[in-house]
Amino acid sequence: MAAEQATPGGKLAGWLVVGGLLVGVLVFVALPFIAGVGLSVMIHGAGAIRDGALPWIVPICVLALISVMMMDSLAEAIIQRLVPGNKMAAQLLGFAAALGGITLAYGRFFVDILPALTGAFISALGLLVFIPMIKRSERTFRTRG
Image 1 (spheres, rainbow, N blue to C red):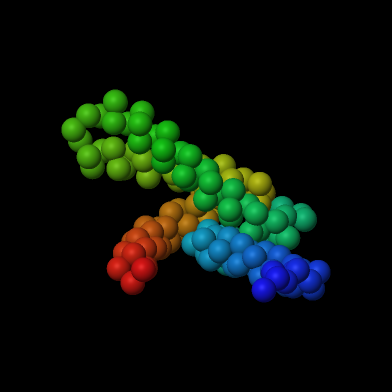
Image 2 (cartoon, rainbow, N blue to C red; image 1 turned 60 degrees about the vertical axis):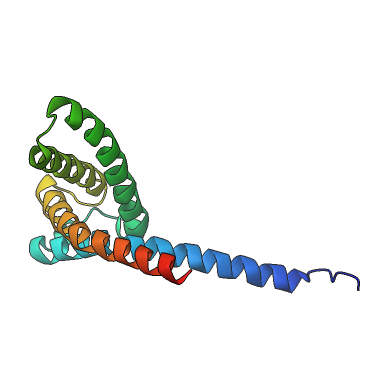
């Protein structure tokens, strides 16, 4: 049998499915960050948002996630050298570094530092809940696969 050629409509549908999955994953991963921003806006009011920043909420939240990952990797290596053997101090310093990274990312969205810091703190607490759920789902998928 001869292999069938893919139709242009089939390729387009494939790209739409892949693009939809990518956007879905990005929004899912950004959920703790979006919650932090939303609750911070509820606390500080809509005047805390920069003009024209609202359409950029998901990219800013993804940037916050990337900054947390980078800060965690860098801070972990540095902190383990500065505080060898004290795991609690290393975790607290790593949390502070991640909080700083999220605050810097939220500085693009909020006018002032206080709403950015409030949103960063709420997002960091959300991540503390969210990360174990992701790790648990990874174990579930590994055992099924």
